[in-house]
Length: 309
Image 1 (cartoon, rainbow, N blue to C red):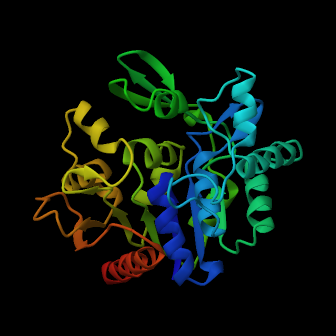
Image 2 (cartoon, rainbow, N blue to C red; image 1 turned 180 degrees about the vertical axis):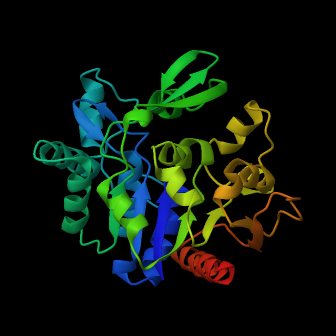
């Protein structure tokens, strides 16, 4: 089975890691949200790409859910002594990735830089940005419009979430790698990882042509709910949904994706959550506590997709 996974955030990186462990390397493409990308201290930061890359390289910080395992913070300590910006923490090992990315971007685009870094780290699976054109997630809040990382990191998601827009999306084009995955004659399933539907998956779907490609598919598309018993597994998804007046339920996820998906994977704790939403349901334990859980869930998702086929 050749698989295209759309991913962002910690949940996306975890499921991508599970898929990578059980699929032949050449059959998996992970297309990653870049709406969170920004420039910080003169460096190009791609948080979601790095989360997926570090997970597949086996070097991610499992405790924090982001960054590199065994990280040190001498750079940030020195920056604090200089009274510089410390709200977005760059670890010493993580810093090397951003500096290398800056050098690579002078020679090519984000796709080429991402591919170079994943090869240097020994990752055989394809990791591609959703687009090589800049798309930036802007969150409208009760404190005004905020760039995504300001909302998410600087202010810890405390402002009231009103809406989100993706600046540059209308002019952006899908990356060559994403288009190649869509055009792969062996493609048998598209998976929306258990990433935040509004913050991580929506920017990918906002790129012209992506939603249309998925809608016109002749293969199963499966999404995973990021909620368990009305709580987000990680991150601000439940808070955001509440502020928008939407229940943090699998039913809301199914309604959000609509006819883009054929199946929805939900947690067994969510009983009979959907009526007439159109998606076929599969209930299981969706909490990925460790790599064994990641692989178990990945297998179950692929088996579910095969049954939908």
